[in-house]
Length: 438
Image (cartoon, rainbow, N blue to C red; front, side, top):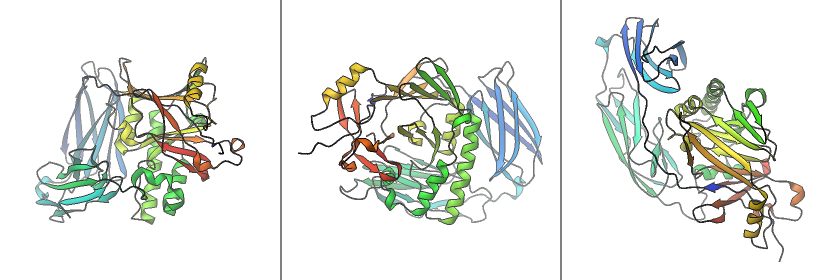
């Protein structure tokens, strides 16, 4: 019987232990007098940097920076255009606070009388998505801002446009509400199991690039072309460690570019649906395989990503790690994130080799990849890797007369104390084997 080669990457999974946390508070009060706006804020951050921006649609109207006083207070005064609705955000020492205000004449405001889903019951398969349409009455209401939420995001999620995605079998309630919460409607979503042997949906679609919509392929290439790389990264080498950091303003700039690319592509194809692995900012790190690499994302950068519902794709010389939005959305406002990729010690490599059956062979380096969140007091909490997508690049010289579709990525389950082969797919365009940690 011919022996098949199996590619290998070792990942440690742990059960996440929850710890109690205390949240800092930022409060903002806005006063409007015609075109004049006064913003008074309070916070728990004394003598910290404060950044503020306001916008209407895609147009930025006011951007400024200052510091809080010894009591954590701050204020901004400025003039802006009248008869517009504005959104705003302040960043106080890395903690973000959203706010809204209007320079319209409140006496002429037309209030929303009702909001109504196009359906109040929806059945959807795991991994599939469907958009719920909302009718606002009257059509000429002044503020049509809507807020969507799911009663159980482990069963079904909903984005800010009303697109619902089935996560796992079960029942959840999707609610839509006006900005003030006075008018609401609900839809009961039943998620059913995905049929075995089918084409799948959601993230699984990314493993079938030959069947993807051409516009989606083009979108991925364009988003990949604006990767953070080279001089855009801050790299510090300490012994056998390489520590990589990214300025949060560069992340914000790349997010703006990415949003413009997505907007342009959606104008070409209004039915285009984006899976989690598409909406990400790519960071390319030219690492040495013998070095331990740490990517540090500070809290401000993480909050920018969360605000736009983007994830991160890390591209190394021999592998990729895709952290989707769902992996970082629950990171708290004051927490940083680290991705640590370490070359394992020789005794661990021997353990890996001895654990494999005789018909398998390891054809890629063995790595330990871990995900951490770290608070301001340097307290670390290791996060599980479930939902993370992993890619391992292949050396064709190792694969003579071998079926590439037989390649598997393995990870070490520290709870079960055993290596598990992940469901994997060979992607010819990237010459890479890809898998999702379940």
